[in-house]
Image (cartoon, rainbow, N blue to C red; front, side, top):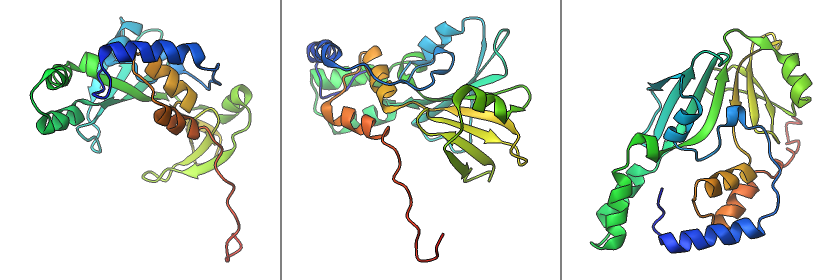
Length: 222
């Protein structure tokens, strides 16, 4: 994966320098070893005997892709949301002048799905609902409640671990679990996949780990 602001030599130098100085980050929950920014090809290598199927959700944009993973030894179904940087690369190509930089962008924009698609988040759908208390035993008590904006399904969220459980109406069973990534994990995922992390990007990612401000009671007293 290529970012136009960095030459290959600068990328390598930046990665070595940042890895040497970076503090040990706090991690949340990496599901099945699937890391942020891993390519589809890398994920496929982790599950060589699995059935991996491309999905077509109605909301998907050109920059979105989604795949399901099923097979022997995998409980339930793993669903992965991928991002695709190629549409943005093609727009940059249209506005760029001929030269080595444009040639490199064209090469990157022509990559296959195996190399170009990168992990954004992971979902696990069990074969049958599991007791919510089982997640509480593993992760502790959730710290936030929410309602899904489309399905109105109740959710329980572990904000520090970036885990969201979609639960039954009786608040007893988990129907699926979303595993997102902490800011520290996103930084590690970028570096693991040889993607430079600027100071501004690092600050942006780490700001995602800051706790949400507590809501103040408004005029209604809510």
